[in-house]
Image (cartoon, rainbow, N blue to C red; front, side, top):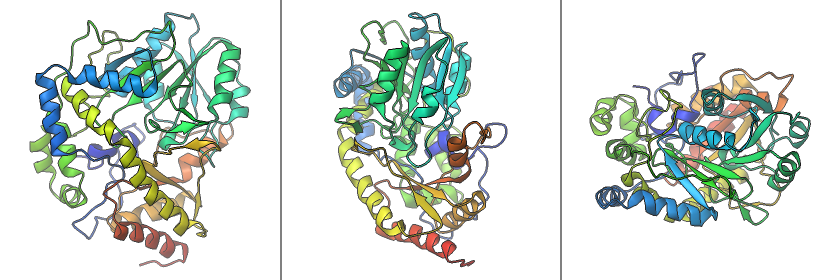
Length: 426
């Protein structure tokens, strides 16, 4: 079993084949091991999910709450983010004959796979490595002939200059799609992310703010309608979400990492657990896609109610990191674009001064019982065409901010960085 898969499959280090690679970091000497990204789920959430499943109300209630939260006019649920993105793009194609989709240079492999799976072409624009935002000059330099849509990706919840991108897309008469994997609840200039695009695509995979499995499309456009009607529902993922709940805690996660995989397999019912109710890899892009289960929807309603509280806890940890790491030469701290509010801080990003030292820090943190993460490291990004994305691919490392991170954990993170910065080898 691959250890990171239960908690951050989409953002784990990948091998050249696109699968998740085994970490080279030494085993943590402590039983307690801190996962890289967690949003807590409680036993009460699981019970509420089971009730929602048997009352046939959970998915509808969740859809209604998300629509109200994002002020959308229609929404549909899917069993993975890739399927949600594919469903979104297929609907856009009914309104346009264009076939090219613009995506950031630095983003998950979910985007090219879903775009290719729906028979569309992909072209990239660069990102700003200091803010994780879209590079506006790079986006403006694109030819918009045959462009169907621009997708903005809120990597780690960091947004872009959304009003500028919204104006650009309107002028070019192309659709704007906001990917809200990490960014749900964040705001730019007083408007919630998701309110700028023609539609937004939400990712409910493990480690995200709403880790119930699956995805959703929310439309803000009067001609783009999404619905669950007429599509079969997937079976409830009670086992996988129960495993996520149980093994999220650092003590249990440490057990999982140090030989408890068989226990996790018994709980989740699979050797490679994920919060998604079905594999995101084996995707048939021909509709109709299945919907999420009522179980997932009922759990999602409860976690959505706690979104603000979780964000507040993460922000406190992020602020502490900012204060403690501001003067370290080993790492550069990233800053969100101006006028962004309610940053979710699902993970805290660092730019390490070199790829080699990033690997050393990754290993040092793992030995201290702290799981960090390296994002989107395959395939290699062309540094000449996309210098911002290439820098992030080589040097970005994220450290945990979730509610299970203790003061002692935070101190160990800073100690690891300080030691490496000062040349301490042991």
